[in-house]
Image 1: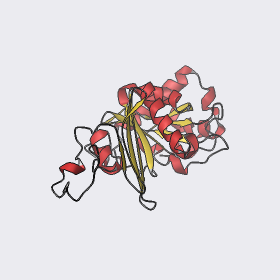
Image 2: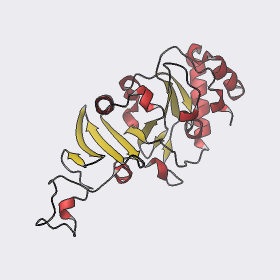
Image 3: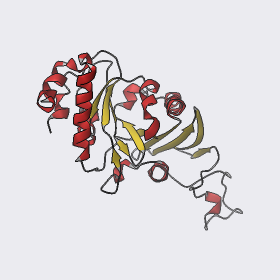
Length: 243
């Protein structure tokens, strides 16, 4: 019954008015569907966050997200293509994947596009969730960023646009440029903490590479669709539940 009525609930925007029992039934629906869902690669549309699965609840406060609604991985994966209303953009929080929750979709609207806004967001996430990571790739523009933050403070960061910049102490899995077999200190220059890993490499070591989600990925629980403004509802987002 819940699955048959889900389209109508979403399209009419009634999900915000549901009682606790109805919300539990919808969460159960998403959880049951997730049990039979095979993990598959997810396109992050250039950038995403990752937080530990055990402490992910704090992300909704950290990013000021509201009216969350339970969905499966496949239902939330196209969040960037969902209809939007002024001031209320949908964001997808994945089910737990190998112990991590990924956050993506419309982050430029939710977080902003300025450097300080990015760094503030990952610090807030780490303060609420214990740890947080941010990854950004723009092959066309030549930008590449990855950030690790713990307890509200950035621990390690790599930034590349023109000249690469490394901040913080290297992590145990990193290869340092000064240790490269072809590095010659007589002719080559490098900072002592300068590594060699880009965002695609870093996310595989730190949490989850969304492009490599597959049969070997351990999936747990269901995901969430949340909105960047309260009280708007999920009207016109009914396409999520058509599978």
